[in-house]
Length: 268
Image (spheres, helix red, strand yellow):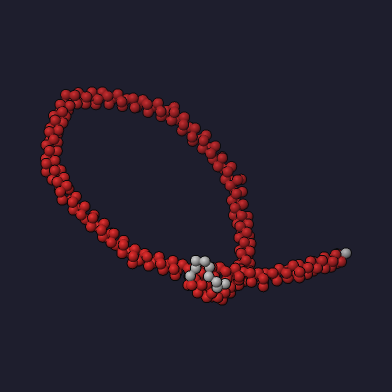
């Protein structure tokens, strides 16, 4: 049990035996407590809860769901059908006839009258006003706005675009390249320092010390858990099964047979 495996150091061999001893002293009793709790408390409690859930479900079905289903099927559904039939023939059909036969023709007539009035009172005067007054005024404004826009564009190019382009080309771009070069040098130095002073020691600590110790502790706990389960099955489960099979079931069958004989004798 204490021999080193290939590729493992003396630290692993030094940790393995105490880890297994600790696991046997702690994990095996915990496995016994877990199996005892499972057999005595959790499984019976689960069966009781399952029975309670089933009974509550049946009670709710017969006291709530079934009456609601019957009410919907034999009361609400026929009433809904009757109300729908009455609404269709007393409201929908008369309103549809009124809309198609009265309101729609009246609306079409009113719309035609409004269109004719609008064409006579507004369309012809507005067309004459636009053709003889507004169109020449718009052409003049368009020429004026084009001249003003051309002047503003020239001023903007001379006063804004050219100075900003020169500032970017001869000042900001060289300064930005210098700052990027300085930051890249600082980043390389910081990365090298972090790698040498932090990453490499942490990797070495994990690979050489923490991972082997945690691996052996985990293996010891798993091994002790399996051993505890085997001991529990050998000391508790098998004797209980033997008692149930060899003692309880025959005694139960014999008691049932005696009761049947007594019942038969009393009845006879």
